[in-house]
Length: 485
Image (cartoon, rainbow, N blue to C red; front, top):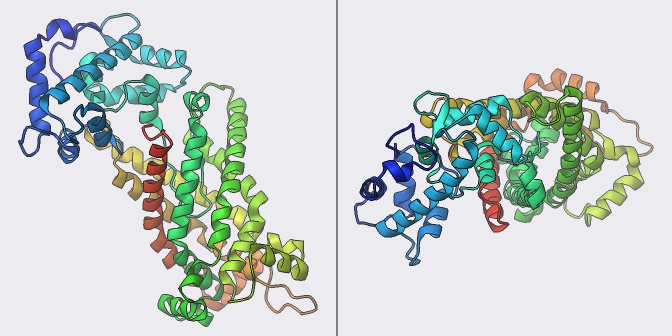
């Protein structure tokens, strides 16, 4: 792609085998490849499109960050001189990192050297992970990498720091679609020591708040259809018109306040439980210094989700009641909690708890498994094992979340109907108030299709929710100084 020269070079030999004129020719040729319109300058558009054509792995913000660092005269584009100066300095840094990996100074880095180097820095990777890292850069199939291969792969990566490089390869993306999400993010030793972990959590929390607020009308529409279904409304438009007529445009966001407020405690509890579950899984497996497999992440994530849901479940009940309330029924969240407790007792705050807990497992497992499989399939079938683009990640997240929802939706519907049931003292209940009773009633009266009432608006919100969550998450990470992991 970009490299050339002798692949049997020693760590510092690129100065020896490349003369100044050869370096100038190589970088000049690369500049012309990136200069899309041939005007002698590279702007963000030129760089983004040029990197795509060269099949260079990119992460969000790569082009912007490179222009920002190399643009000496603040013109928002690069001249040939600025480009050459930046690339030469970056190559020197990459060379220093490469030399630390090349323990025997033979000019090539093999799997053993790569793994031991990362372990010395406190970054523990599995045999499978180290093999994948090598395969991404190993162009000639020698099962090791030369400096040329290392340089060509990382030339446009915004950092030459070894910790940043490994995080760039392995870091996952959290996407919030407003459901009981599966597995919290993993954090490396470097992120723990630097304090970046809490910034990721804050960014994820803000992204969740914005995403849920933007899609709140669809969420309320879903709840209405789940509870009232075909009995009261003929379809989506009929239900939507009813909500507007009953409470106006503002009513479309009923229940969103508490849905946003519960993000912080739910995330904190899930994160703490996940870290504890990971330690237990690693101790049970006998090897503490390794990465969790996808199955172990699923087990730990399901436990964390179940624990956090158990603690904050009363807020879930309040969210449903507030979304279904009529104008003037409750003055505030606190007023709703007081009235429910006064007239229905403490047990009402845990109505629907069992189907909610059961629904976490299929949702978490299917969502995680499909997301990881799609992402791996994309990487395996693209040249150079390129890092998935924003659009690929969004598509994978939306599809995997949709599949998870299909599997767990009947349980979610029964949970919502149980949450919505108002138990009035002295009144004989004519409706079933158990999970199994509701399942039987729905299938008897509405058929199997009744178990999927409201799934249409649920699907409608997935794509915008994932997209908004991703964009806001990236912007928040940039603002907090952790955008380039």
